[in-house]
Image (cartoon, rainbow, N blue to C red; front, side, top):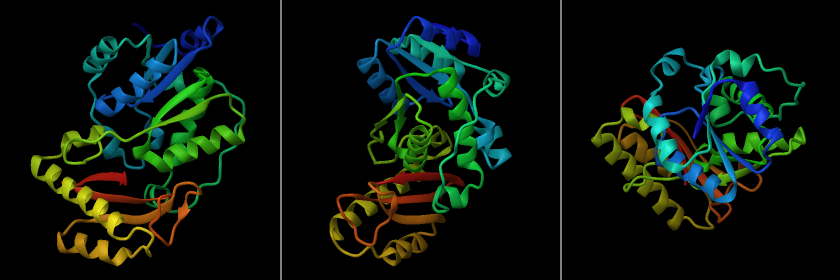
Length: 267
């Protein structure tokens, strides 16, 4: 595995290779990232993993400051998996890279866009740079951040970028908690509560299949258990719009807090 820190050096690889899969990350790699990397390794001759904590997508400076990092461990994981190239740029290597002017998709003001002002603009700013530096045929993203995944797909489509998004299933722990770098800050009691939340949503979907989505029933559970949440939405993932009924094409999206750590999921 070769570690590259310069944007021009990683970009120049595409003069020699064209079958490359790209896995963008912010580091602190876990089994969710590993699943993305393994899928890229399976489908491409060469895989590039990037590690860059993008400050522009953080609407809270404290959140950026405490975001977990483990570069030595990340390098070890990538080596063990057989990653071909690991791209670890600094801020200037990303944001001083010149690109043409891209169009940004219109983002509906709900869920993450409503509660994290400027977040998706920051995500698109770094994706714009990364997909120009690394014009891979395939980019691998997890479904846990489904709204983000959808917005990146829209960005690629409207700008006619020759990359396709490979959406990979959310990886969970035994209790059902979606894996996330921020899970580092959760205690065992928090993870047990997360397992209860996962079970609650799964049972709700089973009991209300093809019935009207009644948010009050879920809200009462959160209020009873004194859990703060930002939203609970039933979304048609084909159209990415609110859905009145719980159907096979809908998922329940949620953002809630455990130990002051904000968790998102879709089930």
